[in-house]
Amino acid sequence: MELIKKEIEFNSDKIFTVMKKGKLYVGVSNICLNLGMTLGMKNRQVRNLQYDIVLSRGCTKFDAGNSTLAIELEYLPIWLAKIKITQNMMEEKKDLVEKLIDYQLHVKDILSDEFFGKRKLQDKSDFN
Image (cartoon, rainbow, N blue to C red; front, side):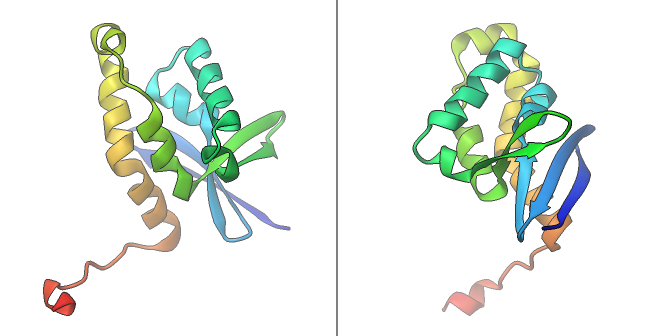
């Protein structure tokens, strides 16, 4: 089984990805650190993913020198949307909040385009 590893740049961050059996996975710790999460916040996200009834289905572990949790691209937006932006975060970690919103809205498309090519938008007349 061949793994294709690729580092993709997104807004000056490096996102580590792995393609396995036609599915694209993203390193969870890598995303958390890119967002500026503390170690405690990152560990909480890893736990949340492993115990979430939906998200756990999209998780796998890779050996990258140590056991690394990764999430399938299709599950990435769901996970990011489930990260609650608290009042405390808005007051004390404004940069994290802004990056998280940007990741929530755009990172899946950037990663998908990088691996699978840019999608063409359908003409609205195709729907009539």
